[in-house]
Image (cartoon, rainbow, N blue to C red):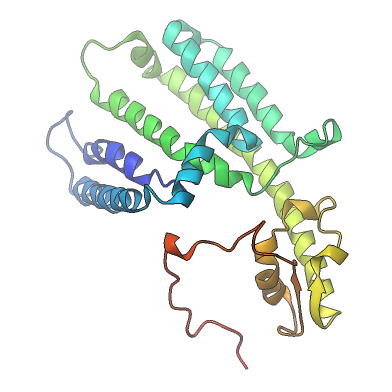
Length: 282
């Protein structure tokens, strides 16, 4: 995936460095210095990784998928609500003092909490677990923007723009914190729903591998039916069979692959760690 940790580690460096300052850009606390160095070290490591794999075909493909984050409902819905609040707040800072932000965030929270049941209205409006792979491409850049905003909010002390002056009002900041808390709670509901579906899927997979012997063809299983199609991935089925089985080694599920339509992962993208010592105990 396209790791953006180097980006937001770099922009987050000033936020952590000045977190313990008594005055802006002044003497910093003891705790903030090591944290700032840790952020800087993370930025160096992440930037080196990005440079090494920048021209790799898989990395190029993943970068091109960064704009598909809208496919993740759990990411896109809150992002739209926050974008509306930001845009309106920049144009009319007084709007932040009213009920407008609470209404926008409340609607976003309601839509977010109901996402597990959108499928009842539209078949393709589902919570697709691997969609987080797409959303976290854009999440790094979003975190970088949030870090910059936090830095400006703390460091900008003179001639405040209207939006920053409004955000520093206790009543406004308290309402926004409460609104974000509601949004976090709403985001937990789809996760709970997916966790339940995932648990049921593991139970069905366990019953298959525990009741059979040898190779179990995935084509003979209802892996493309709801809700198993949310979790079944070709490459993960053999390992998943061994993980969930009460009698490992007895049976495993696999998909017939011609290795052309779905080629193996390119080993040039990285090396495997040593796995000696990891396995079933005899």
